[in-house]
Image (tube, rainbow, N blue to C red):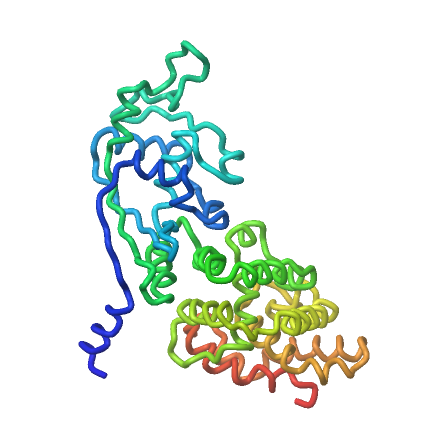
Amino acid sequence: MSLLEEVEKSRKKVVTDGYDMSIGELVNLYKDDELIIDPVFQRLFRWDDERKSRFVESILLGIPIPSVFVHQKEDGVWELVDGLQRLSTIFQLVGILKGERAAELGTLVLNGTKLLPGLDGRRWEPSVEGAEDGLGQALQVFIKRARLRVEILKSESDLDAKFELFQRLNTGGAALSAQEVRNSMAVSMNNTFYQWLVSISEYPAFLNTTNQTATKLDSQVGVELALRFLAFRNVEYKNGLDVHEYLDTALVSVARNSEFDFEEERLTFERTFDFLDSALGKNAFKRWNGANFGGMFLMSLFEVMAIGVSRNLDALGKMDEGARNNFLLERAKSLWQESTFTVNSGAGVRGTTRLAKLLPEAQALTAPTA
């Protein structure tokens, strides 16, 4: 297939529309549940009051605002794809923001800005009757009549197009991690799968062996590691594919697999990390320097040890706990003398190369008979 044919084929998968709408119209759609923000996505609303105030300033001054992207479901309801920070700011300002974040954030009280210092302390409605801290009817009407461009991904588009659009629009900035984007899309594709994925990422032995910081937990690193484990076991990695593109593909594949055995995979996950936790604890995925384990979590070790152990569960399960712990401890040390591992796990090795070289060897590198 030529490049031109690839372009034409892919374009047919995406059906779009778009038009300008007033903020007042978007407010009404949101009130009537005809424009929805998934609760998981809503939790990623992170602008501080200064950023929100500058956005309101942009509306009042008529500064152009980037388009909002939505996905139109089969029932006609719009699901927000991109524009979370902007629309959530508007909805919080007007006092109609829904969900957990609404209760947490409360009323939006604006800060003064360089061009509009008079915004300081202002809110949509006065704090008490007769107070002069409200925006006033004239500015309220001005904001409601301001217009935003809404780009619509129609329901008849290919199912993958929604994920692709969301992923491309939301991973460019610092607001969302790649896994947070996947989480938001997983919910809309298969909420049962998403909840299951989160639940296994909270398994005590997994948390202990991966030894995650509070910052990494907040950015969903644990969920990404659980997804990596799941993906490497169930979705073949194709040599050369970008790691994050592979994880995106794997998530879609598993989320849509009606025959996926959640219970069996959970059991495998728990046994794998129980074995690793018993033998190595917080050192499971740290470097052995010849005398001690130390340093940071190493993804290469996770990929070899976790996937390898999961593929050797039957053999490892036949060993008594003491023998198994000693074996896994020695394997974690001896990996640093294995050329296959050391050559393909260094800091200068690309993720694609590491996966292509180490994943096929993970089972052999951790096999009791090795």
